[in-house]
Length: 317
Image (cartoon, rainbow, N blue to C red; front, top):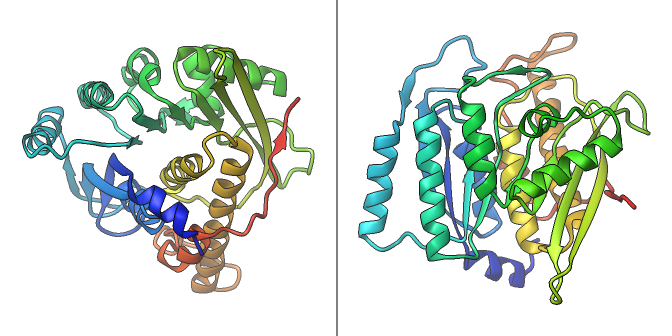
């Protein structure tokens, strides 16, 4: 179980999570809030969209929050003087004005609390193509990333934001350094096309965290992880990953290796439980459907609280 000191530390922290929301399943705030609350964080959620279910289903219905509506909600929080936050967490959005309003809110909250940490999953696309409007790219690059403290791009997003391709581990380190130069102190490339040393059944993730020493000099810790591939499409895993990285970097602020091992181990346990359940529901030889592949979040509560470490992060020299 989670130690009392860890829970006490987390319970002093309040997170403003601005993400999508679904009635059925786990994505966005549904995917991030429960695990953060299990780990003791107080979470205030603003739903950027409210859909019946995620868009991996054949049909969905719902509403999209506008920038003006976001502003109204935030003003209500301010009027009651309850806008003191330690973390802001954001994920998928499709609207530039909404994203710019998020930046304005983050900047205002950072003026009130210079120690606030903004964790951003810069959702732009994957495998060479964008799945958000093109006009979001310059907003992320020029406005969002510079105010972020922790970012979790995949390889495509990291390349897009920096303008540099990743073909080798050295390229990945250079891309992470370029992202550091843009603002964030912690960068985790959640997935890449780099070859794994463990074979085709694994993919490579890389992380980098820079620190300022008391004398003003800087040091950077970089890690590499080999992550099990799963032959299925999950929705909400990116949101869960960003939330868990927030939680475990809070607990291990100067140890990216341990924070990544905890985060990736949570992901492994949740995904394995989900795929096992989905195959059981689908039956022998049948491919699981989107409803069957909804993350088994509640059933993974114990693994979220205290994940058995099943992946080791290798510190790069």
